[in-house]
Image 1 (tube, rainbow, N blue to C red):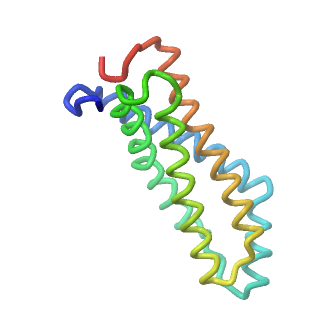
Image 2: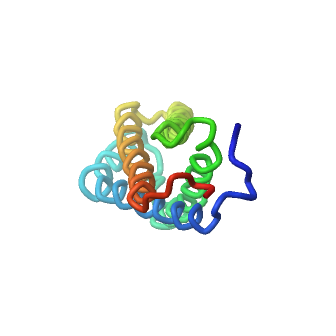
Length: 151
């Protein structure tokens, strides 16, 4: 049985979603500046494609990660009763998000003739960023010693 939506502490879900987005974007940004940008530049040049990750697109994506983070945290909060207080809701939410991002990247790469190597790299970074963000939110709530998101 899921937790009643009326009993969820929405302020915690919103704050958790913002934290999720900050951690996700920090991890992804470090990887982007560290090694991913050049791989993408090389891959798009080889495929004779336009470089997709302009500052405007990256800014839009950073903004979209806030509602994505809120959705992940909400899923965890609303499924706490079903899966218990452990990490299962967070793992399921992260896995579902990562699968959706990876499948969409694979489809886009196939349509754009981009090499799957750069997509695999991007997918691995997305997995790391998603897990880091979800774990950070879960740890924050565990550290607060709140026995249930809805209490």
